[in-house]
Length: 150
Image (cartoon, rainbow, N blue to C red; front, side):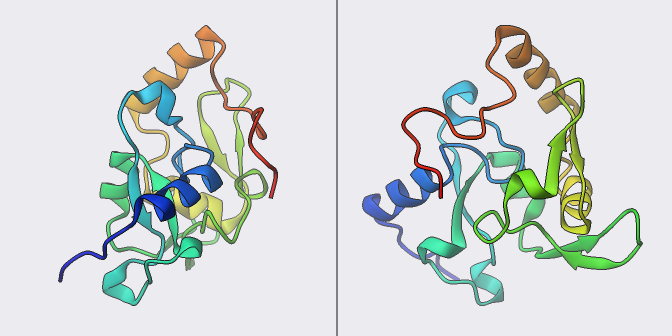
């Protein structure tokens, strides 16, 4: 199956909407030094469309680990739930930063399932967040300057 073409204008729209961060782990494109990937939140293979409300930015690892999954097990209830949807749910309502400011904690079934399934606290990412935190660049602000709140 061939992938849909994404115009530069559409990429700009969802990049701004995503605040140039991974929709899942919140890694900031400006800190990782490479372009974030295009993420079909509902994969094309499962009927997802290439439209603004189904696209977000994702870091390479979150995108690869997620694959074409849209659901996972909530560790607290042991039930299958949908993964976090960056365009339909607010990150701040489903996750929080641990007091160490480097670990992501899921606070809803969607958040817990996503933390586990996408390995949002993978060791290499924790190392990077620690460096970013110590430099004063992390955690990312909820509403950085120049970005309109939705």
